[in-house]
Image 1 (cartoon, one colour):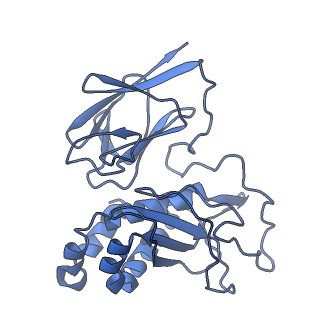
Image 2 (tube, rainbow, N blue to C red):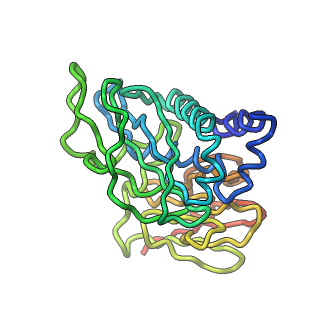
Length: 282
């Protein structure tokens, strides 16, 4: 059973079903959990052969209505999300500099249903008071990954391996398959990529293409079984598709999965919608 599925099942039994009522809001806990997983993947830093460090201090920014609805349960929800991050890190063999914390915070610039995730790597001895992050664009999902100096990467603790002076050019792919977003992008004009949905062709002209029910998705799919930000196609070598913590998951070439390699003609099912991935040279 996957980490996100176990997280959902734990939430179902909390507070005699209170969470089931609270989370009828636009923002679903599994979507936040998926965003935290991606935040770890996107900010994973290899220190040596046996150690890949990921953030351990997270802020989930919510719109004022969502924050008011969820804040009474922020303690329990934060603990559950932190436990999910711990389970995911164990699965991916990531390590932390200190204890894992997940905080909810109100952001007046976000509309209902939109959220933003920020993170930092915080040593156990560092202050728990987060620095003021630079403003980012609101989105129905995770914001662009933070860099040192953004949300605030602390000085390394004594005895720790030296931290790179700048982030690596390409993040490592999570163990278990897939590729880092944007890695190995083919020069324009060399390989054409597109998807076909109900006879309509959508060109893939960027490193990542987000599919979902939200109007903020790169390709909007009007299907009640599709989450607002359901999955994304990553143009790499090889190209991959990644589930974004959706409610119903993805099926690729007949296999239910969270991440898969794509080939010309791959069939992707989201909700009740079938998507065909196509690519051609020249």
